[in-house]
Length: 96
Image 1 (cartoon, rainbow, N blue to C red):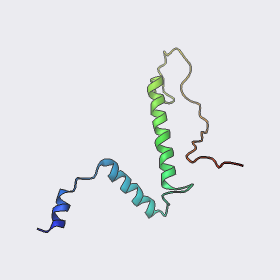
Image 2 (cartoon, rainbow, N blue to C red):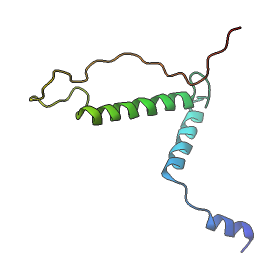
Image 3 (cartoon, one colour):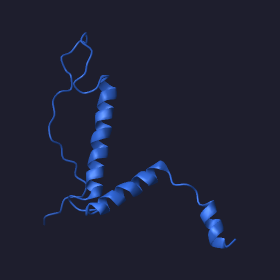
Image 4 (cartoon, helix red, strand yellow):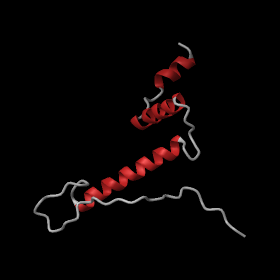
């Protein structure tokens, strides 16, 4: 057995996160999508993760999913409103 064979056998298995990331990068390359830039994979993925996390946090906070609330609740708020939001990921350019 060579040293390279030993290294291959002792390499830990990839985590679920690593496997998911590799699959996303593979799919992006397949579609000609760049990894960075205004329409790149990282921007799209960051947006999706943030929106999903915020929606899950809101669901936990109010105790029900969007558009679904118990009929006997004490409020008429069913989380049916929406508005666009902007998340700045790069610092603005400074003017002199």
